[in-house]
Image 1 (cartoon, rainbow, N blue to C red):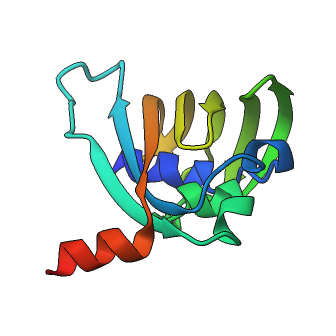
Image 2: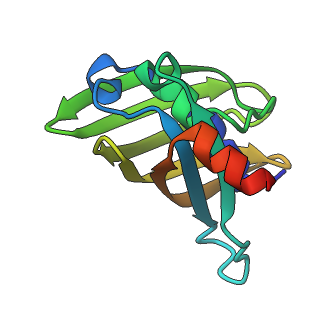
Length: 151
C-alpha cells in the first residue's frame, strides 16, 4: 500500500468551516511527498492528483483533498484540532487495517494549501512512521482547462 495515498485519505477527513471558507472552486493540483525515516532508501516519487472543485465542493476541505480514497484508513476522528490564523493544527486517529494516528498542520490561502504530517501506521504488522508534505494549488477554471486539455 502506498503511504502517500494514505495521507490523502486522512486529509479527506478535515471538515473545518473556517478552513474551507476561502478555498476557490476550480481545478486543483495536489502533490504529496512521503518519506519513511526508518527506511531512508525508500523515496517514492511524489503523487500528483488533479481535481475539479465546484463551488459546493470548495465549501468542504474533504472534497479538496479527498480524491484518493484508501480503504485501509477508515473511521478517522479528530482527537484535537485548532485554527490559528489560516493554519489548521490537528491530531487524529483512524481505525481499519492501518490503525493510523496522525498529527499535522495545513496552511491555506484561497488558491494554495501546504502542510506537513507525521503519521504512525500499522503496516504489515509493524508500527511505521511516515513523514509527508502536501502542497496544493488552484490551476484555473475547470471548464476552460478541461477543454484545453481535451483538444
